[in-house]
Image 1 (cartoon, rainbow, N blue to C red):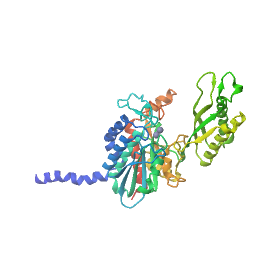
Image 2 (cartoon, helix red, strand yellow):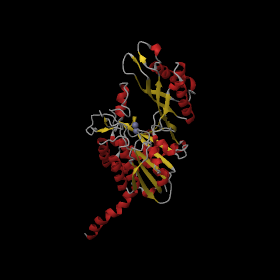
Image 3 (cartoon, rainbow, N blue to C red):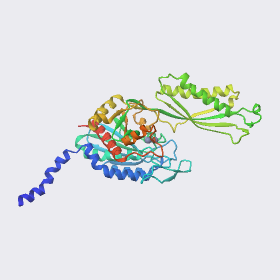
Image 4 (cartoon, helix red, strand yellow):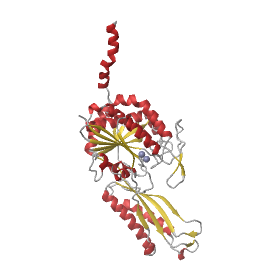
Length: 447
Ligand SMILES: [Zn+2]
Ligand SMILES: [Zn+2]
């Protein structure tokens, strides 16, 4: 009897190391999932706009501390000094070895949620201009935060399999394209170490949950925001000959800009020039003094970027000169420094290495190679200058496979990122994020 009770007492101790030895990114992701789901819903129901991520950042800091990280909060210096930095860095140290940066973004968008979910956001907040707007996690950054926390927890439990330092970065203001730059400006690499590799992830609204999707090489575009003021000489709408009409001129300029893609650019280098906003005039019968336009310009190569931006300026001024606008009223063309992101370049060698890891951990059929897009992602900042730090930003699917099939059959488009109707299926999406990131880090830091 005594021996039996001794065995009952000792058994857990004998079995525990076996259980520990069996821990894998997959089993840890599964074990953490209920808690990560609760975190996800909590963040989803409390979204915060760019540069206002106070609550989310505090949650990230608390969780990183809980996973054993040395945590620093309130990081980030923006060009606009009025914006507060809510960046969080957690250092997970495990002896000598490589340094790997793991990043999540944390911000939400000014979108009114229409998902109908029980945990849908009802939050209203003031945007930068002081205007009240609805706020929603319409880009899935809440799922990123949950997967990021899951990754930190998993890697804390797998310390026997890796060495070095992991720099966990909770980044604010991704949607402004300003957060990564703000952290670097605040001395991210001087204070916490320059990483040997940088890893980021993003959910994908047209890829099956459970899948990882990645692009080798250029993955997302340089994003530039350009403001143009076309000036004229206003007057009565009935007497155009006594004016210089900036509205007709703006229309000509817009069309002429489209010839940059078709006539001036090498067709093998993708570019997009979109005029997203145009405002001029107040009334039917008044020719205004000016028209204001806002453009988004997308490119990959920096040489192409410089050429396109110069072309936009030259064409605007050339059209104005042709319309007889005096040179002191030439269009004002300004390229924003605040709202710009460099192209994301997934280091090809590193991408290939990680694809092999993911195929092994998730199965060949669950890893997709996808085409690059002209969207923007400021994760690219971490590998600059000149992509000298090998980086990969990979995607994890967020949509139920049955829903993808249903929409395809009906020839309908799925809700995209930033749509008021977009919501990931949380469990498989977060689980794949945790496994994808944990296995990637283990590969780069393995003993
Ligand atoms: Zn977004
Ligand atoms: Zn996003």
